[in-house]
Image 1 (cartoon, protein in one colour):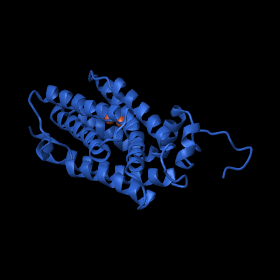
Image 2 (image 1 turned 180 degrees about the horizontal axis):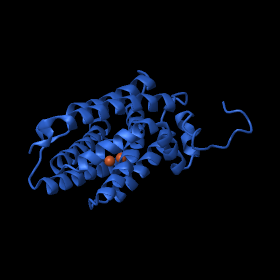
Image 3 (image 1 turned 90 degrees about the horizontal axis):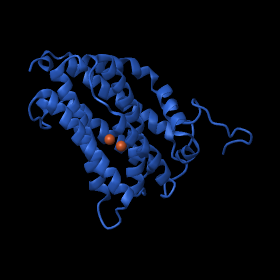
Length: 244
Ligand SMILES: [Fe+2]
Ligand SMILES: [Fe+2]
């Protein structure tokens, strides 16, 4: 338990807590804290995204990959939460993730000048992208234990992924602006921020054990994101990725 007189949160301490205390922290502070935790991967991510934006063929495939990840997010919600008990907030969430998938698909096809499907040749490191999602979910299942209900797994997995999505889309927006590429992620990023806060709020209503350690889950996610980033980097170095 927190000792008395230490109730003040700041950016470096706000994520060194259990998941339930997250509700007492401002969203901007939470996101800043996540940025500090993941700083070691920022430079490589910025360099990767800048190189991708500079290559229109690769950039179209990359947006198609982001579309696939958003699509995975939406169908995982439906797959695990469908049924009589599905509530309005969950339906809103699945709708917004599906729209994010549509948004990136539309942008990808506009840049490519043709239809793109989710076949490996039209994507950037699809196996790494798929593994990232699966393994984040597996790490949450392990942390929650065998008795965890499906709503708790859904809410906690979503919250962990939302941290990364907000961080990534902000970096991507800066890189797009720097390259003079006209694409606004403002609405999409705003919705991801609402999802993050919403997941944290709803977790307090589930039977999620309060001792589940958010920092260790974020550490696991960071390692998995590092592998995804390495997969993207390997793909972008391939000569075949430059060719049409
Ligand atoms: Fe999304
Ligand atoms: Fe989201």
